[in-house]
Length: 126
Image 1 (spheres, rainbow, N blue to C red):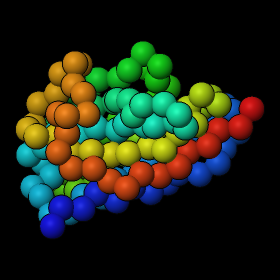
Image 2: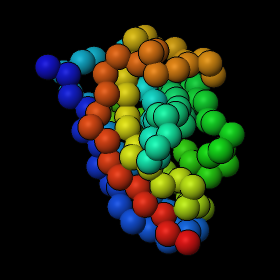
Image 3: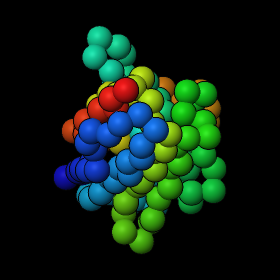
Image 4: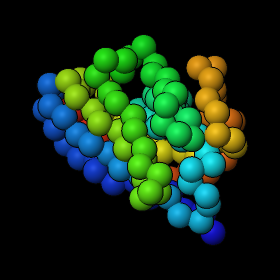
């Protein structure tokens, strides 16, 4: 049974930082690309950042480039998202997801990811 469990969400003031984690079990973690998505109230889920199986290839949406950093530790089956300079518009539920293969491309969408976590809430106040 594949499980992705996010943690690290919370409330923070604008300009602050948070680090999200996603612990993965039930699959060969280092065979899969991973991603972080988010969904704000009333909006569609959107891709934030992706990382390939080795961690050497990453993609960031324009809205988070330069502020967020995705990383992974294959030895611990864990994905991370370091978020800095947070803005109120970053408020959303953040989901981690496992892809269908090891590579990433900047045109990936939700359908390119097979397994999903339950999400963790991030709230940024002004």
